[in-house]
Length: 169
Image (cartoon, rainbow, N blue to C red; front, side, top):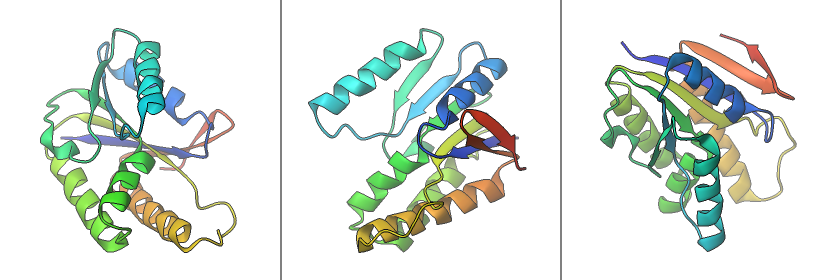
């Protein structure tokens, strides 16, 4: 049976560090499933730097959308992060929120059919003010909806505040 641990929080709140420590406590060789798209050469260098910072104990997999294509039976998988993953759907689907949510749920549900421990990281971006930009409002709504879905299906849910994890489920 799959186990889902969901970690949310604001930018630079300590989400990834906390999630990495959780993964390393569960496995000597966890998998890091990175969802960022390589937008340009500078971003590619940033991704490579992050990979080298993680260390040799991690297996790094880059997958910008189709996470269900990977089978992680009995592994520990850190998915980082939902925000960048949903950005890819949002961009590719011309900001069609319903289509993005549908595709993301299909991918998540497909992934979770394989028994493993999944630690899923996302940003909590709905605590701030409402942006004046319609596209930003749609993105915040979309991310909030998928975050709610992940929290609902998770076995454990944490929110990070200034590096401190607060277990809420």
